[in-house]
Image (cartoon, rainbow over all chains, first blue to last red; front, side):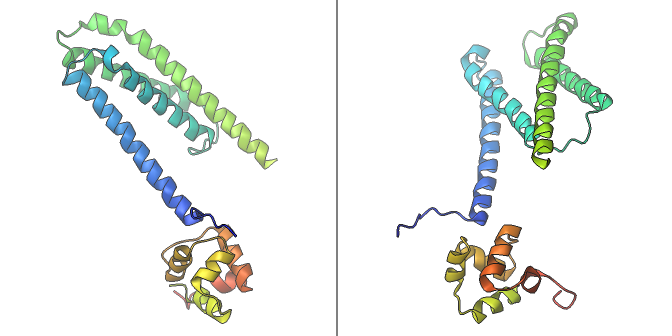
Length: 149
Length: 67
C-alpha cells in the first residue's frame, strides 16, 4: 500500500504552524522595514512603494480581524466604554504618527494647522478599522455560540 | 520521563514505530512523549491508551509518587 511520505502527525503540524507564524511575522516586519527604508532613506515617492504599503496594510487589518473572528482574543461582552477607550487610543497613536511624519521626517515640515487638518482622516480610518474589528469579533462570537448549541 | 507508557508498550511487544503506526503518529512523537518532552493532545492520548489496552489514568496520570 502506498504510504504518504508527508503524513504529518499533531506534533509536526504544531511545529509547522509555529514556524509559519514566525516566518509570517518576519516577512511582515521586513516589508515594513523596506517601506520605511524606501521612504526615509531613498526618499522615494509613496507611489513607488504603494504596492508594498497595500500588502502590509491589508495583512495587518486582516490579521487582527481573523484573530478576533476565530476567538484568538476572547471577548466576554462588548462594552461601549472599552470600545471608546480603544478608539481614542488608536486616534491618539495615529495622530502622533502623523505628527512625527509631517513635523520631523518630512522636509519642509507642515504647519500644525495643516496637521490638524489631517485629523479627520485619522478619525475616519480608525473608526472604519474599529467597525471592521467589532464586526469580526461579533460574527466570531455568534459562530462559537452557534457551535455550542 | 513517562515510564508507564514505555512499560505498557514493551508489555505489548510493540516498538515505537509500531505504536506510532497504530496511532497515526510518528516514531519521533512517541519517543518524545516517552521522554516527557512533548505533551500530546487528548485525542492522541486516547488513541495510545486504546491501542495499549490501558486507561488514560494508567498511562498519563502523574501521582504524588511519580513526581
